[in-house]
Image 1: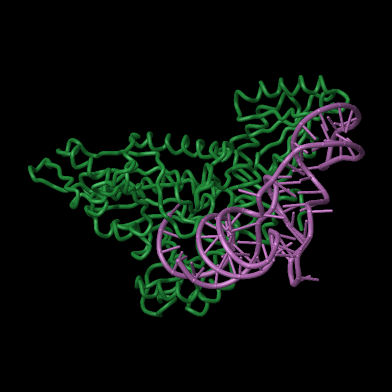
Image 2: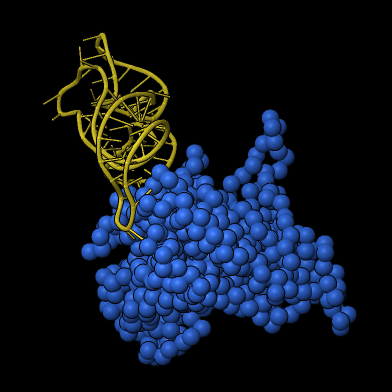
Length: 478
RNA sequence: CGGGACGUAGCGCAGUUUGGUAGCGCGUUCGGUUCGGGUCCGAAAGGUCGUGGGUUCAAGUCCCGCCGUCCCGACCA
């Protein structure tokens, strides 16, 4: 057993859910609010979200998208236009019925997602093939009246981005759908150090109103799956009901092909549950609000140490997100634990011994390794160290996912693995929704995705035994 | 939304069985001390016992309703 460094945090092994909540609250990522199911994202948690926004927004812009903002309210009549869509979201829509004292003539939905209101505008804006493609993204809050909530993973109100695009052809829309999923995958793996399985959702699991839904699925360290991002090819479902038509080059009036895609503050939950340990958070350098925390050890040379600490802070802040913890009221040991709990990738200790040697002590959050570095080498060393930590965290998470991914060839095996082992189970599937439902009923696990990277395990469906040519992932999920 | 657990100082809890002056640890404030893995000593502040009703001479404690959190299901980014 690992020594218990942080007494406020329940060990992961003892109670994973409690550990998760403890980490969030103690590391000050978020706190519960007076509103049921709604959290307050505190500055440290919001800083992570800002980094997510920065890194994703850059990728969106690079692929030609522009940001815009649509209203939070959606008239009921608008929301109801697309039948499948309404049915999907109806149970979790919050309604505004009054303005002041007056009852509204028409109820307003607080957006659970913005397809309908955006489509209503697209029908106005799009006239010609020359207007296409429309590539718009919005950073927004949405509200879904969930039955049960959990900080970051499922809250009544959450922050996200939703991309909404319109295209001339089906091929173009499909290409866009896959391009954006690829961006999510790249972001999750390279910036968040979270390995994902990417693929397509089954009919049962797809977005309400979509033709096809693609997903990236991540494995949390309790073995459960988390849908970390989705990209939908909406086909012409919405363009037909919202009448989004354009005059094509051939002189014919046609409906546009659309996509939508999103990731949310749920990603913060994914970061916590993928990398965290009994000491608390563990953040990958690229997303960490603080990459280096300087902890001075005063000893008998407080003034000298403090001066050097400030000098180092000035030096580092040009290239890293760095903070100096020069608080007098806490001892170094206390600070070590505190910053480890908050997931800072690298701690820099500077004390009287180091002053004499022109060196500093670096400590890695991911491995706990302590490294003495000459001051002259510091910047270059840190650069490499950040890369190394980022890569190592991904490797560890990937190994965990691989180690906890099993294979089943028949229903008995599938059931046994899903019930008794944590993690994902790969199995062949015939494509029938009935087989999917049977797995869910008997194991509570769901079909997470039909991965792009296929393997041939056998030629028979692991559930019904009929001919099957798709390999899929099953898992219990959040 | 169903089943279970919980709600007492900022946090973690005791007190509830058997109704009778609201407690402990940590944290906080002040003074000193210490500083390479949660220093030590002293003093102090801090409570509508989740909330509303009921029973009682008397309710943190008993009864009923409601709210919230956590867990397990059903539904979902």
